[in-house]
Amino acid sequence: MIRYTIISGSIRQNRNSHRVSLHLMERLNSEPNSKAELIDLAEANLPVMTDLWDKHPQHTEAFTKLANTLKNSDAFIWVSPEYNGSYTPALKNFIDHFPKQAFYRKPIGVVSVSTGALGGIRGAMNMQELALAVQGYALPQLLLVPEVTTKFDTAGSITDEAFNKQLNLFVTELIWISEAVKNKS
Ligand SMILES: Cc1cc2nc3c(=O)[nH]c(=O)nc-3n(C[C@H](O)[C@H](O)[C@H](O)COP(=O)(O)O)c2cc1C
Image 1: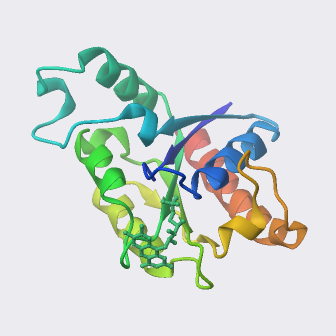
Image 2 (image 1 turned 180 degrees about the vertical axis):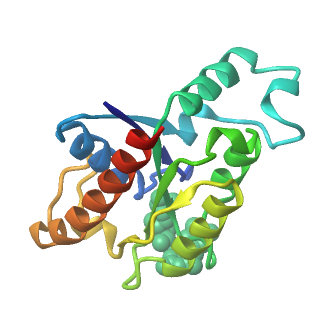
C-alpha cells in the first residue's frame, strides 16, 4: 500500500485550487494499492514559522499530528496556485516547520493552478526546486491546471473531460516512481 499525502497550498478565502486537491485525493483513492489523505493548510492554520515544529511553545497537538502524517507518507502531491510567479507563502511556511527528513527520498509531484490560461509553470518549477531542497524526488511530470474553474467544480469533480489526459499522465508517473521507491526500501 502506498500512502500519499496531498498538501493543499492555498489558504485564500474562496480558493479555487482546493478543487484540484479534492479531485486528486479521490482519484488516488480509486487506484489499487493507494491510500490518499489531504493536509489542508487553511484548516491547519499554522503560525508563521519561528522554529521547527517541535520547538514551538504552542500548537503541540496539531503539529504532532501533522508531523506523524508526513512521517507515515510514502509520497506527496503539493498543490498550489501560482502567486506572482511562485507557489504560496502558506506552502513554504508549512514545509519550513518540519525537518527535511519528512520528505527525504520521497517522491513529490507538484501541481500548479491558475485561473488564467498558463496554469502557473513558474509556480510549478519553483515547487520542484523546493522539493529538491528538502531532498525529495521531484516528479519530472508536472500537472499544470490553467483556467481551473472551467475544469473542476467546487467539490472537485471534473467538468472538462478532456483534462483527464493530463491528469492520467501525472498520476501514472507519480504512482510509478512511488511504487519503485517503496519497493526499494
Ligand atoms: C496574490 C496573487 C497573485 C497571483 N499571481 C498569479 C500569477 O503569477 N500567475 C497566474 O497565472 N495567476 C496568478 N494569480 C491568479 C490566480 O491564478 C487565481 O487567483 C487563483 O484562483 C488562485 O488560486 P486560489 O484561488 O486557490 O488561491 C494570482 C492571484 C493572487 C491572489
